[in-house]
Length: 187
Image 1 (cartoon, rainbow, N blue to C red):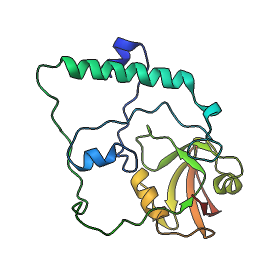
Image 2 (image 1 turned 135 degrees about the horizontal axis):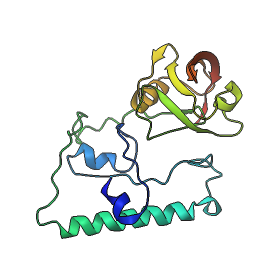
Image 3 (image 1 turned 180 degrees about the vertical axis):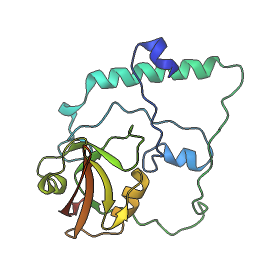
């Protein structure tokens, strides 16, 4: 990515569609949007994600890249056009709220992973995934008998289940496939 050359901050483009982050509503409306992310930690989106756990060096890197992006866009003679596809979601006038995910496995996905499945970036201590034996770099391939191809299919499958429900999880560890049971916890 061009910002790496200019800023010296190594960046990585995420090729999977991330549909649950703050920028997704802009993409859904056909407005260009990006998500800058310094990486995951075991505290991410948990009660232990407090001010003292902020990755200050990661925050500086994100700010450096953001500044370069804003400067680049401001200096362009033509506005940036939207090259993506608008969401196929129902129109915003639809009052029906989509069913959200209630459960968690305790897995922090590797958002930059572009292979099939969901690679584990980290596992929260004491979580359902930790109790089931999943570890960093395992690749989840099946949840409750449904093939997991990417983050979207992973999240969609989790939405179908309830807190306390036990499901089968298949994953790759190296070249070996393993299957275990995981009891889903509250999100």
